[in-house]
Amino acid sequence: MSRIMLGKLHALAVLFAAGFVLSACNRGAPEPDAAEVEAGRENVEAMAGEHVDDTTDPSPGAEVAPARDVIAESRLPYAESGDELVYGHFAAPSDVFEPLPALIVIHEWWGLNDNVRAMADRLAGEGYMVLAVDLYGGKTAATPEEARVLMLEVVEDPEPARENIRAAYQFLMTAGAPRIGSVGWCFGGGWSLNTAMMFPEELDATVIYYGAVTDDADKLLPIASPILGLFGAEDTGIKVESVESFRATLQRLRKVHEVHIYPGAGHAFANPTGNNYNAKVAEDAWERTTEFLARHLLPAESDGT
Image (tube, rainbow, N blue to C red):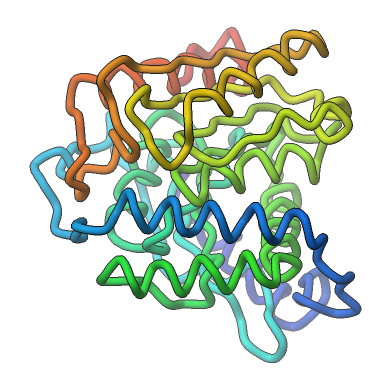
């Protein structure tokens, strides 16, 4: 992705800002499903319990450089909420001119912070256009209580987040991405699965890191996207029983999926700013993620280059 291509994306962003292809959030939004909201509230409280003593201070695990040089723009408008633009972090390899397969990256409950931007850059280094979305309207949390409030706001009124994801998908499609996948952690892991539900025929790959999942066959049946799920056996927020039930339903529905539950790993094992960070498990999960995405998104003849 050269600066010429990034310039074209900025031009596309201007068109979005002018309202030509921009998706405005929360216009005529349906009432949220009461059962889903209640399940979401329970998930918020579970996440609050998992992160009660966490901070956002980075560890050395947050300093891993991309495998190749990338070019990034940390404030690229891709959606609109009311009269306000929504900005995401865009990254792509610096040495490629043509549009590439793309990833919608969805942040943890902390918000679109430096840790997520760094992970977006690492994914871009694997050969993708990457748009890290912002479902918190420009806010990030510095404490678990702040994160709890931000996540709860989305749970109570999820339609703006859905419109946000729709706008991100449309932006990447308009940018020329031949295939699109989603990747998310924690709060974003659940939203990565939601993205597969929102684009059941269109999405080409779905990666879920310790996010809330479902065993509702009616919701999972339409999904055509291959799914990779990565979970910790010691996660008290996303319980193993719910993951096993999710996997069993995917098997029964004959969906293409890989679900890995890591013994001894807790919630947020891949978050280098969290107390549960597990470098060995995080590295294995990263290798599984990059292999899965390459298999389903990258052209076979390119080998990701």
